[in-house]
Amino acid sequence: MDTGPLVASFCPRDEHFAWARRAFAQVAPGAIVCEAVLTEVCYLVSKEGVPRAKVIEFVRHGRFSTVSLSDELEPIQTLLARYADTPMDFADACVVRLSELCPQATVCTTDGHFRFFRKHGQEVIPLLAPFGP
Image (cartoon, rainbow, N blue to C red; front, side):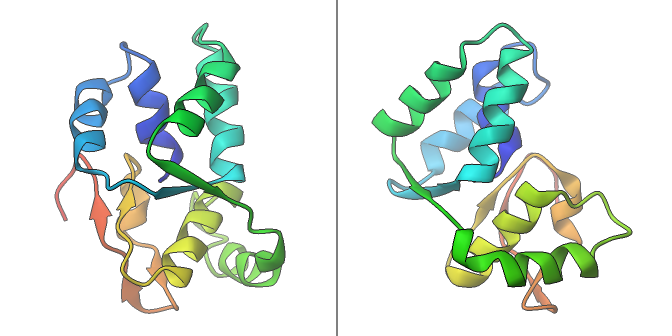
């Protein structure tokens, strides 16, 4: 799970609000969200007046599993270096790394740049997104 769909689901004025609500119906129980994404979501929704604790409550009581990637800093650093000329941030690199660690995973995102990121340097990342391929 990337940041965008979670933010959109909390913010009715977000352009992807309706899509995010529909997308969550397709997300299987146990969907993975990393701490970096949660950090971004908490920050962004708070700017819209949504209490940050609601995000954590939603994740804890929802269909999500949280993971820490503290043991994956070297491959994340490699991704950040490889994509230094793109808008990849730390959370994006973490999501790409999770897609490498979970080969059958589909990344739920609203960010179009995920169309260009590759897992293991060359493999297309399957996406659940509001845009076409």
